[in-house]
Amino acid sequence: MREAQVPSTAGGAILYDAALGVAPDDTWFEREHWTAAGRAETASGGRGGVAFVETPAGACALRHYHRGGWAARLSRDRYVWTGAERTRAFREFRLLARLAERGLPVAAPVAARYVRHGAAYRADLLTRRVVAAHTLAQRLAERRLGGALAHRVGGTIARFHAAQVWHADLNAHNVLVDADDAVWLIDFDRGRVRAPNAAWRRANLRRLRRSLDKLGARAVADFDAQFWRPLLAAYDDAFAQGAPQEIPRGALS
Image 1 (cartoon, one colour):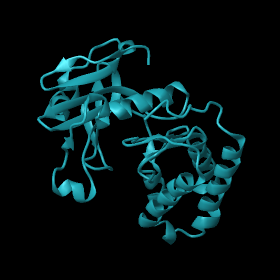
Image 2 (spheres, rainbow, N blue to C red; image 1 turned 135 degrees about the vertical axis):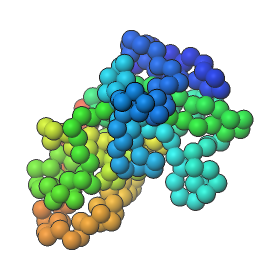
Image 3 (spheres, rainbow, N blue to C red; image 1 turned 90 degrees about the horizontal axis):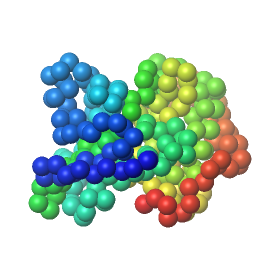
């Protein structure tokens, strides 16, 4: 990121890079604004879904942060205020910016916003849209997996793990496959860099496997032989080679 800009807004602030060339305002984070202008479409998946919007900075994915699990019973989208830099949106923006700078396949951040409400806040994030992409969940539903894709998925996850990057919710909806069959990881809310440890790396992979099973992987003939075992083999091979650029411990939080 060349130069972070953090202008104040009514009740909050927006974070973006000066290299963007245009200053986002509050309307950029309002789905209704883009819908009214005929420049939005809704994508399925994730808590609350994602809107694809055509902004002055290009095609983006707009996500409003929603709580999951038991916490959603208390508030669907409000989080405890502990400071601007600790908001979900600002933390994910800065993590994505660092990962993108290092060439890891993530949706690059465009802008992040929080709006404070006393001791709580709401937040939103705009990232570049990965055009013509399908989730791994969609590829599973369409029975379009195979060894070649397994190799790319396993190798991609290994790149992140070798760089010490932990994805908090590695599931089949957060793995994208674009029109060129390149693999991307999205939704790094709560993600962070961790000390090297095989336990959290394998836990990430088990989380992905549970997600695939919930989506019907066990009903796919020879799923283990044709996809999962090749994925793990590709992961192990790629991880053994190490990361081209490791992110120093403590560089991100």
